Image (cartoon, rainbow, N blue to C red; front, side):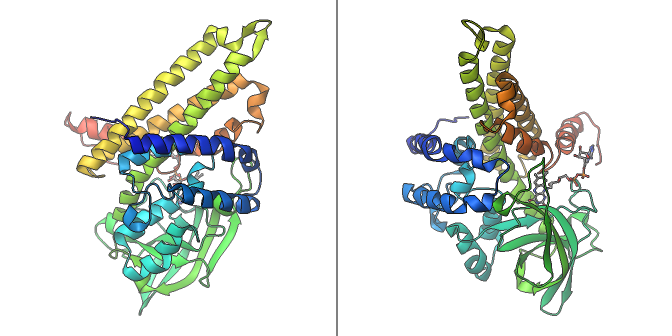
Length: 402
Ligand SMILES: Cc1cc2nc3c(=O)[nH]c(=O)nc-3n(C[C@H](O)[C@H](O)[C@H](O)COP(=O)(O)OP(=O)(O)OC[C@H]3O[C@@H](n4cnc5c(N)ncnc54)[C@H](O)[C@@H]3O)c2cc1C
């Protein structure tokens, strides 16, 4: 395995680091508890700057107007962008849009690409992914209550979703709904359907406050009702019943992106921890960094972040060589492991900052609130641990059913 960074990636990483530190960091305190919508004019200006830097859409091929980094190369870029809560958004590689772009590129019809993908790539619109429901366990994606019933040339969608991130202000949702409830194969019952959010019957009930933050616009997590929503049957993505398979395809690379972003956050947290440990004196002439317990936190964080990065790179390398399906155990391993590293490093960094760590004067408290969810979204820890253990135990002759 060779994870050497090309000169182009090194240059991009250096450019991004400077841009985030100089131009984006001053905006970060506004993210905490504030309105994302009110920041849009400033963010739009920064997005234009990113376009002129040639780094817009770093995860997308040049053919589709992106910067054309490979999957592994983007892992490095994603880590760097993760050092700011605004990084991915400014470069138009943020969840859930990035995943939706991938789905549209791989499965969209020409008409869908023209109407939905083009404006998404250009940053003119945003989108959301609407799968999880309050009435069914999100950790079991084969169990959905939302239905899409074929009526002539249309689908009629009924159901209730929640935690549809970024739905507030999105132009369209990709909705997972059951289209073939009687299919023997439970993985072939649901489809993904594009629903423009101005379709009658699409009702955004509320932006759900999460960890004390109301959240709006891109930073929203919405509850959405689909009440007799009618869309053309041509809005389906891929084949009928392919919803689960496409979701898995989307989630594999998506988890790598999340993990690299978390590593970026962890690096920034460790950097802040060390700066504080070097500066803050707990007795005259005795900075915190002279205390062995703080040294242990720093060393443990360094080791865990380095291990996490290598594990993620290995998973990305496996996906590149053998595809997402072959890498599913590696993907599950990093999903729970890196989320845990992130949580531990953030916690230590806050502890070293004392009361300052509880304020929004650093991004640590923001991340502590927001990234607790890392152990839940895109599959809770427990589900990923089951996938890994099941795979290992198979070699010992035990078949573990979910
Ligand atoms: C901030 C945030 C953003 C999100 N964004 C989106 C989005 O954009 N679109 C979307 O569709 N969804 C989104 N989600 C939803 C997310 O994917 C689900 O929360 C997740 O899949 C878990 O589903 P659930 O909440 O229904 O938990 P449940 O399925 O009810 O599970 C609850 C808990 O039970 C445990 N558990 C579950 N299964 C097992 C098992 N087999 N064995 C042992 N323990 C188990 C786990 O600890 C789990 O946390 C988001 C969630 C959050 C928190």
